[in-house]
Length: 308
Image 1 (cartoon, rainbow, N blue to C red):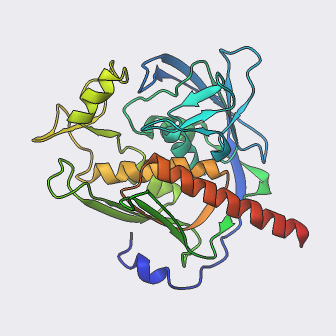
Image 2 (cartoon, one colour; image 1 turned 45 degrees about the vertical axis):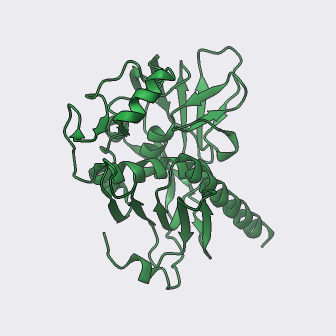
């Protein structure tokens, strides 16, 4: 971690180093209930060839089309990331699994799932990471194609209260700075974290950070039919007097989880990103907007390389 990220970003970025694309070494299976709908789900990760990307297959739907992990398929839903190839062929709450794959640099994978929602487990992506690391990764014969960030790109909410900025970074990696601030009297205190995201750092310092929700939000979500099976032991519920029936893994677990979500959402750009992302109170919607920006940059750079 560094305190001079902003200063570094004024300097010219290096060309990202070449690395091979990776896939998972063998089949890995998970079983668990979805966080929003509570449906019991079986999900399996399978190896895939280079340039496959991440592709979901709904095994419970006959003749279901593949659902690519792409920002082109993002469906607008509150508080989570949903991919939809058709009205029925959709997968919900993919952000934690996508974060695990991106954080550990698994570029290609087929994901078979027999329900509409990814298992939620403890609200982090550590369970996914543990099984991926146990199975191992295999480098493929094709290089990853990172996006080279050559300027400043910003997305904002309509009232400018939430902001995401992507800019060049001196070092050849993804760096993230997240400023979490819900206001002076909010139950979640202001938190800031800056880090360079390597697979090792992602696993040790980000992957175990859990979803958090305010007690007031939890009641509203239950009335909407979401998360009725969850208790305060299943994720971090923040009341006016602190954490309910649970213990934080870090004092700043909330901002770490925000970084986890952002990594998973940006992975929907379908490319490796080398640059510095600065977020202020960003959520899934703005993350999706920046993923679309990165995807556009990637397509433009690939076209330029092809023309050359």
